[in-house]
Length: 432
Image (cartoon, rainbow, N blue to C red):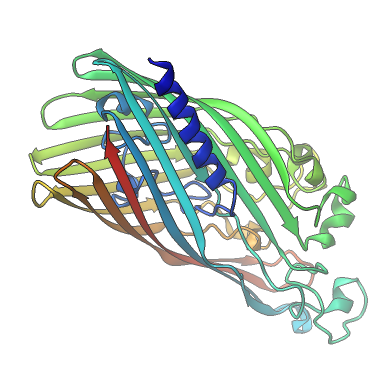
C-alpha cells in the first residue's frame, strides 16, 4: 500500500473522529447499540453481516470490505428520541410526578473508507458511534423536598424525579475507530480483522440522593464529563455459498475500558463500564438478480458487564458487586430487503426486533437510561449517478414501548419509563 493511501486513511479518520467527538452522540436503539451501521444497513433494519455494499465493515463484518471496492462513504443522521418517566401511587403522592427529557435532536455523522490493495486484499477504516443513554430531566418540581431529605413532607416539590437537587440525567457515548484488513482466502470466501480503538465519555447529574449508599460519595454526581479509553477487536468471515446465497459472521469479545475516575462512586467496579461482547450471524439471499433478502441474528451480552447488568438493588454504589442498570443480555433479529428498481435506483425496507433489556425490578434507575424500544421499522433508497457516485437516504421509526415496575425510591408506588424514536439520514459515496 502506498504511503499516500495510508496517509489519506489516517487524515479522513481523524476528520470523522473530530465530528463524532464534538456534539453528543445518541444512537441507542438496540440497548445502546445502534440498530445498524452505515446508511444502507440502517435502511434494512440493520441487516448487514452478509452484505458488502459499503465501507462499514469495521462495524458490521470486517470480511466484507474486500468485496466493497475502492470507496468513501460519508453521511449524517438526525436522531430524535422521545423519553418520558412517570411515578404514580407513592404514599400520599409525595413522589408522584410525570416528566419528559429535554433535548430531542442529535446529529450523528458516519464515515467509512476502503482501498483495494490487491485483488484479494483490502485495507480501510470505519468510524462509528454508540450511545443513546442521554437524558435531561428538570431540576425541580418533581418530588417533595422534605420527604426526599427524610423529613415530613413539606408539600414543596423542589427536587428532581430521583430526589436530587439539580437537573437529572446522564450523557454517555462511545466512539470506535476500526481500521480494517480484509483478505479473500478463496474465490468465494473472505476473512477480516478490525482492531477497535474505543473512547467513551460520560456525565451524570442529579443523583445526589444515592450518596448515602455510595462507597465514594464524592465521585458520584455532577462531576462534569469524564473520558475512558480501551482497545479490542472484531473478527469476520464471509462466504458466498452459491450465486444466490451468502453467509456472514462477526465477533467482538468484551472490550476492557479504563475507569471513569470521576464516577467511581456510581458505577460498579469503581467506575468501570466495559463494552459488551457481541456477535452476529447472517444470510443474504438473492432469489432473482434485482432482489436481495438479508437476515441477521445479533447477540449483545450487556448482562455480563457489571455496571450495565448488575441488579440496581445491589449496594453500595461503586463497589465490585455494586448496582448497575440491571440490563439483561439481548437478542436482536434484523430483516432487510433491497430491490433494484432500475440500474440507478435501489429501494430498501427492514424490520428490527430486539429483546427489552430492562426488567421491571430495575425501572427506577433506568429513568436515567430508558432504552426500552424493541421494534423498529426502516425504509431507505439509493440513487447511483452515471459517474458511479451514490446518494442514500434512510428513515427509521422505533415504536413506543413502556416498562413499568415498583418504585425503589422509598415511598412505594409504580414507575414507568417510555420511549419512541425517529431518525432520518443521508449519505454520499464516491467510488475511487
